[in-house]
Structures are given as structure tokens and as C-alpha cells.
Length: 270
Image 1 (cartoon, rainbow, N blue to C red):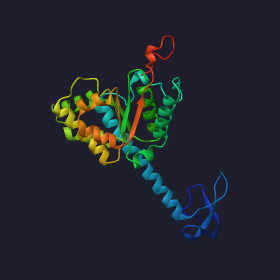
Image 2: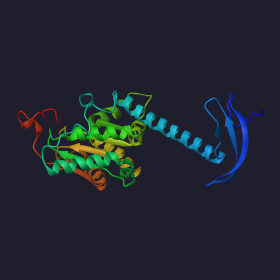
Image 3: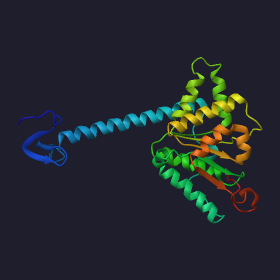
């Protein structure tokens, strides 16, 4: 019995052939192939080739995202998610403060679950509110969802970005431009505690703007966690604030600090 190499492994044989019609590519010769698992008619060769090409492209994109993630994780000397928040998620976030908290939760969850749309609409912005209101919990939940959908995402601090850039001046293997490019290439960047310092040096403000501006131009969303936007603008500059505000995603955590609620069981909220 004749073997057809294009259709079979060493244990498969053609039992018959027949002209069939693909709805996309017209007529083709289909082969009825015998194998130990059962007989099957071969499909449209063009469709098969296209699926193989799509699979290869998907693998390349996945590897590229993983490479981006690993580069930034290496710069930061840690994974994207702070160890203290490894177990948080949308599922274990507790709504206790009424409609405003529910609205913010829904908006953050929608952002994460529809991240492709956030990219398309060039969404950037802030999670803003006092400490203890659950900003970090929801930010990490966003990161986890985006990562699970195959995107690259990093949760970091302004100080860590600045430290990485400063370290490049003493490291001949990595340049300042490479550090900025690596933070630019990540699909989602969330920056925490930008307001934790009284002031930032001019070069720190400038480098943060370069990263945020590059990300804006490339449609790669950036979110910043802050206690107070007016104070934040004095520290990171008007240009950076303007770029982030243009993204139109501002979530205000305006309810009571969990840590002020004695016996509430939410003392670990951040």
C-alpha cells in the first residue's frame, strides 16, 4: 500500500483519496489515512499550514513576553509580585464599604479581564487613596490576571526603578537606555509608593517621565499607586502626571482605612 509522506508518520497509510472542498480555499485532495488510533480524512493543506504558522507565532510571542518579564525581574532582583501579597486575588478581596468600593473593584477587575481593550484605548492612571484601603491588593490582583492571560506585567516601586538606573552607571553590561527600554517593553507596569519620599532628584523625575512617556506612545498601560495626587505631582512632575491622567483610568479609594477598624479582620489590607 502506498505511503504518502506529506500525510503520515511511519505507522500511517493512505487507504483512499477523495476530492473535497474547503470553504476558504476551494478544492483539495483529501487522503483517508489509516493509523492504530483509527482512520481519518486529511484536511485542507492550506488551513493546516496556516494553523501551524499561527501556532509558531503564538509561541514566539509567548517567548518574547517571557523574555521581557525575566529581564525586568532580573533588574529588580525579584519576581513581579511582592511576597507579602502572593496569595491575594480578586476572589479573596472583601467588599465591606458599600457602592464606592464595589465600583472601584468592578473597574479594576474589568481593566484586568479586558486588558487587550485597555491597550487599545491606551489606558493609564492611578489607584489613589490612603494606606490600608486595599490598593495593593487590587493592583496585585490585576497583575495576576494579566500574567495568567499571557501578558508580561511588573509591580515595582519608583525607588527600585531609580536604583536600577543608578546601578547601570556602574555596570558595563547594562546601560541606562537598556533599563528604560526594558521597563518600556513590559505590557503592564504598576508603580507603587511613588509618594513615599519627600522629594525625588531631577534626574529621577526625568527618567520616570521617559519611561511613562515611552509607554504611553507604545500603548502599554501604566498604573501608579498613590496616597494623594496633588503631593504626587510635586514629586514626580507635571509632565508625568499629565501623561498618566491622559490615560483616563483613575480609581479613588475614598473609604475608611481597614487598619483603623478594630476586630474587622482586614488588618492586612494595603
